[in-house]
Length: 145
Image 1 (cartoon, rainbow, N blue to C red):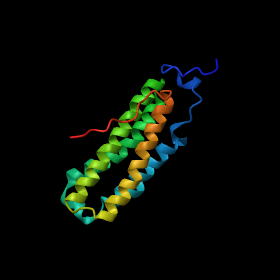
Image 2: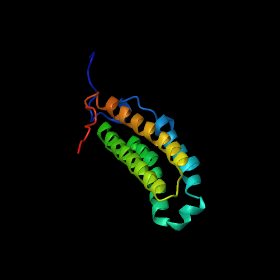
Image 3: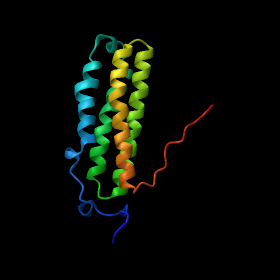
């Protein structure tokens, strides 16, 4: 039927979905965690704060892990739920990078470079969510104080 939106409970086998290893957002999430976050948090300053270092690492690892978990589930609803968690982890990671910069663990260049990798990934995850939900998600609400 032309123009039919995908059923959120439609089984994965009927969605023509890639394996998670083929998804660009998964690949980018893995690269962010392995090649960037783990290298940066190996620096001497992070050895003083194991809690922040480990939380940054957990947030970074959570992004591709949740993408993979959602793709392995059997419904679009489960995939979308896991993608929202991955997107939330990206927000956590940006917050932790800001804190690391604020306390002197990252200089402004490191902070900006890392944030410039996390933010587009988060946006790509959001675009994928909108695609899966048939474009029903509205734009984020801007909060004012």
